[in-house]
Image 1 (tube, rainbow, N blue to C red):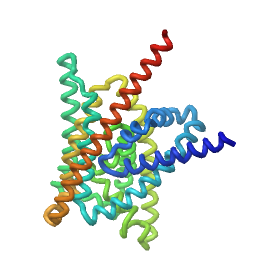
Image 2: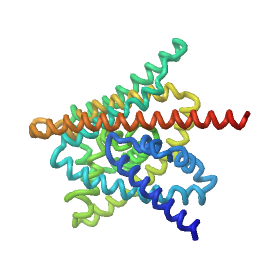
Image 3: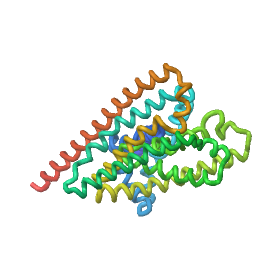
Image 4: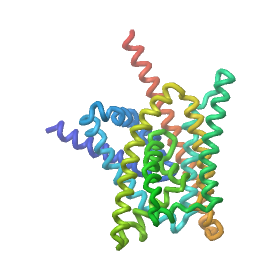
Length: 323
C-alpha cells in the first residue's frame, strides 16, 4: 500500500515537473533543457528517450507523466501568449528576448579557448556561422515581408512539409540546454502562425469551415510526429557532439543564442508593427527585458553551481570507495 502511494506521488510530481517543461517549451527564450537540468531530471529524460526502442515499456512509463504535464503546461502558456501578443507585442518580445540573453552563461561556461590554431579557427567558424544563420533568418523574413501566416491560412502544399520539420527543429532544440524550441520557431517565422492556428478567434476551434478543421488537425499530427523525430534525433546527436566536439558545439550554441536575440526584434511578426506600437508598450517591454534577463541569468548560474556540486560529490564518493 505504501509503495502504491509513493508511486502515485512520484507520478504527480513528474506531471508537475512536466508542466514546468511545457511552459518553458512554449515561452520563446526559456530553455526546457535548462529547466530539466535545474530540476535534476535532464539525464534520466535523455536516457529514457534514447532507450525508448530498447526498453520501450520502462522508458514509456517513465516518460508518460512528463509528457502529460508538458502538454498541460504548453497549452496553458500558449493561450496566454496568443492573447498577450495582441495586447502588447513589444512587451512580450522584450520578455522573451530577456530570457534568451540571460541564458548566455550556459554556453559561455563551456566555451574554452582552443589549444591549437586549428581548434581556434573551428570555434570561430562555428560561432560565426550559427550567429549569422540565426540573425539572418529573422532579418530576411522582415525585409522580404514574407508572411508565413498567409500561406498557413491558404494551406499551401509545402506548408505541411514545413510544419513537420518545424516540429523536428523545435523539439530537437528543446533538448539542448540554453536553446529554446519556441525561439527557433520564432526565428524561422513559424511561431505565431502555428499559435494562431490553434488558439484565438481565428483558430480551428472557432471556425465553421470543416475542411479548415481537418487540415488543422493534419498539421497538428505532423507537428507532433516531427517533435517525436526531433527529440529522438537530437538526443542521439547531442550525446555524440558533446562527447566528440563539446567545445565547438557550445560555440555554435552561443552563436545561435546571440543571433536569435537579433531575430527576436527583427522578424516578419514584430517588424511591421513598430510604427503602431504604443509608447507604454516600449517602456514595459524594456523593463521586462531587464527583469527576464536577470531572472534567467540567476537560474542558469544556479544550475551551473548545482552541476559542479554534483560532480564534486560524485568524485568524493568515488575516492571513498577506492579507499
